[in-house]
Length: 84
Figure 1 (spheres, helix red, strand yellow):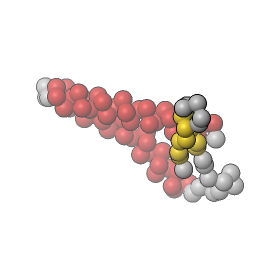
Figure 2 (cartoon, rainbow, N blue to C red):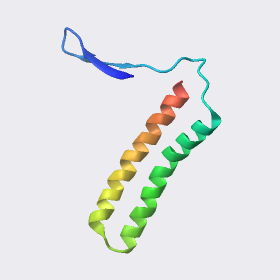
Figure 3 (cartoon, rainbow, N blue to C red):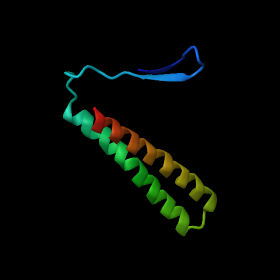
Figure 4 (cartoon, rainbow, N blue to C red):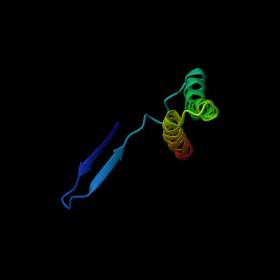
């Protein structure tokens, strides 16, 4: 669960919670999750390339935004996995 609270000084404090350390995660679940996380920017990249060669620049902008957001997701989850 992720949440935030505001202290007396008006500063926002984020609270991150994770599962128990002895919790077992299945290999299949982990494989599907990480494959989906890593595949998303690759798929958006392929769609961006198709838009580039077909001169659909409006849709290319959308693909670039999606590549940036999904790449940020990859970096965030990777850092969380590394720190866990």
